[in-house]
Image (cartoon, rainbow, N blue to C red; front, top):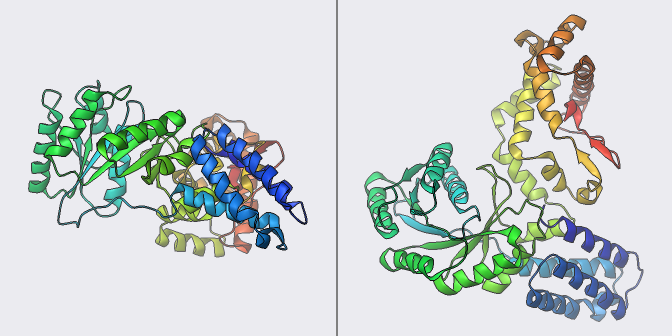
Amino acid sequence: MAFDNLSEKLQNIFKNLKGKGRLSEADVKTALREVKIALLEADVNFKVVKNFVASVQERAVGADVLNSLTPGQTVIKIVNEELVKLLGEKTVEINLKPSNEVTVIMMCGLQGAGKTTTVAKLAGQFKSKGRRPLLVACDIYRPAAIEQLQINGDKQGVSVFTMGDKHKPLNIAKAALEHASKNGFNVVILDTAGRLHIDEAMMEELQEIKDNINVHQTILVVDAMTGQDAVNVAEMFNEKLSIDGVILTKLDGDTRGGAALSIRAVTGRPILYVGMGEKLTDLQQFYPDRMASRILGMGDILTLIDKAQAEFDETKAKELEKKIKKAEFDFNDFLEQMNQVKKMGGLTDLLGMLPGMGRQLKDVEIDESALTTTEAIIYSMTKEERSNPDILNLSRKKRIAAGAGVDISQVNALVKQFEQSKKMMKQFSGMMGGKGGKRGKFRLPFGF
C-alpha cells in the first residue's frame, strides 16, 4: 500500500514513546521532529506538515497528557485524531439528485491518471446502488479513448453514449442528456478529455460544458503516484473549475502517499474514492478514520468486513455451514471459497488490513501463485474426485498431477492440507488459521 514506508516509520517512533514510563515535553518534541521528517519524506506538502505537527504538539504537551498513566498511547491517540482531521474527518458521498431526476457528473483530470477506467469503476458503484448510469464519451482527442470507455462499459453492464470524434464535447454532452431523459438513465457521467499537462484550451472546453449544462458534480481524478504534482494539479483544477471532490487512483502502488494526506488540506475538497487496483471493482469509498488507522498500523477491519459482505452469499454460506458440521465439505466447496477470497483482492492486501499485520508481513513473501496452482490441481480432478476426495489413490493422483502440470508431491500436499483443514473446520466452524514465518513463503490452509 502507498503508506507502507510512512506507516513503518511512525510505528517505530511511537514504539519508542510507548516504551517510556513518563514523557517530558522534550520527549514529545523529539518524537514530533521525527514525525515531521517522516511526513516530508512521504511527500506531504510542507505547509500541511507544519500545521499538522503544530496541532499535535499543542495538544500533546499539556499536563493532562504528560502526567497520564499511558502518555505514549495518549500521544498516539492525538496523532490519530489529527490525521483523521487532516484527511477530512467525515466520509463524503457524491451528491446525487433523487432517482427520478438526472444527475450530471463531469469527470476531469490529466492524461494517464486513469480517468476513463475510473469513470467505469464509478458507474459500477452507482449501478450496484440501483442507479441507471450512462457513460458519455467526450474525449474526442486521445486515440482509442472512446473504444476504451465502450469496452469498460460493456464489462460493467453500463450503457455508453458516443457520437464519435467529429463533434464538439459540449454538443455530445447535450445530446447525451437528451438521450438519458428519454431512456430512463438517472446518472450521466461525462468522460472528458485529459491532457499531458494543464493548458488553457482544456480548461476552456471544460468550462464551456459547465456554462451550458447544469453539471451537478465536478470530480477530479488524480494519480497518487505523482505525489506533490497531484496536489498542484488538484489546486489548479479547483481554482479554475471549482471541483466538488477528488478520486485518487493507484493508491495501491509503490508511492509515498503524500497526495492523500495533502489534497484535502490544500484544496478544501474531499477525497471521495480511492483506486486500489486495476480491476473494475477496485474502487473503494474513502473513509478518513480507516485510512488514518491503516497509516498508524492499527489495521482496517471495517474495510475488510465491507469486502467480505460485498461478496457474501448468505444462502451458500448456510449450505456450507451444514456441510462442515456433517464433514461433507469437498473440493467443489473449496473452489467456491477460493473464488470468494480472490474477489476480495490479493491476500497481501487483505492480511494487511488486520491490526499489527503490516509490520509482520514486511519480510514475508505471500505466495499468491499458490492460488493458481491449487485451482489447476482441483480442475484436473473429475467431478467424482472433487465430490469424494477419499477415492484419490496413487494412479488418480498421478493423472491429476500430469493434467495440472505439477509434481505429484504437490497433489499429495494439497490433499493432506485439505483433510487436516476439514477436521479443523468441523471443530471450529467459520474460523480460519494460518501459518507464517519471519521470512519465506506465507501459506494459509488449503495451499493458499
